[in-house]
Amino acid sequence: MGRFVERGWKGDPGAYGGRTARRSFTYRAFVPDPVAPNEPVVTFETAGLIAAAEATINSLNTDDRVAGLEAIGPLLLRSEAIASSRIEGYELSQRNLARALLDPRAARGTARVVAANVVAMEQAVALGEEVRPLTPDDLLTIHRTLMADEPERVTPGSFRREQNWIGGRLDSPLDARYVPPPETEVARLVDDLVAFVNRDDLPAVAQAAIAHAQFETIHPFLDGNGRVGRCLIHVVLRRRGVAPRFVPPVSIVLAAHPTSYVEGLVGFREGRIGAWCASFAGAARRAAWLSIDLAVQVARLRDEWYERAGRPRRHSTAARIIPLLPAQPITSAATIRAALNARHQRALEGLKILADAGVIRQVSEGGYDKQYAADDLFTLLEAYEERIARGE
Image (cartoon, rainbow, N blue to C red):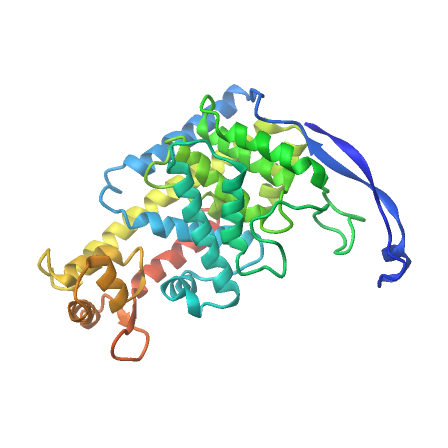
């Protein structure tokens, strides 16, 4: 479980906010036990839930209905980034994220924040594929990518050197809901966490659950902890080989049940590790099942696009663009040219054929590099997200 340590907070006599803001006080910070050497003990029922989650994730990666649909990977990653960002209060639609990813330099505000989360998730997946141990520097790399455009809030790529807290006041840990370990404990606890992630003798879903909860307990950054912690889930599942092609977007389920998610993390801190693993396994299994269902719908939509376009020749530019649309639902001739290694004029012609057939729609003016949107895909994704929100 862990222990509490008592710390003192020195008040600032010149601070705004009345006597409460100016007074000194003591508070308790929580220091969790190490996880690297421990053997998690779960009930038979929880072990069954973990095994069922891993089986469903395996199905997502091997199901014949998903075979040949590599574009579903970026689609799931975007859904994960949107949901993970939503948990932290950043709301963005799939359409606006697609615009931001097409032209990152033009992205502003929330779109820029969520686009950075996509890139951080991509880094996490890539780290999971590397045949070497994870290191604390890898976590710093993810954080640096995630927070690169928010230097006024935090030093990107640096563990905290001061106390942080959750809830309560902005200027002090007075009345905080949770106070993470002192800054002097962060390096030791992160080293232990990384050692735990590098183990290969635990069920992968349980390992991802514990790694994520321990990361959130440590809260090693001043900001961005939740999003980096959910990136860590992707690192573990990819690294352990459970999700070699597609990592289920667990955050879409966690975001749909924020109270249960927070209660699970609190329960983990209080020693209810088995209950947290069971809850996380349920979320991972549902995310994997929903991803399979989404992939089937995307495959069906892709076939409808081929029919609508008049079944173009297999090697024609129009035919080669269609499989790219789920991964790039807002696209342009420049994007297609790079993806297919085609001439710009050929890319324009292929896009025009699909636009004339109603597969895509022109959404920007300009002659050289018009932008096109696959509206049917956004409609499908909106229905998918509404279904998750309803708990179906």
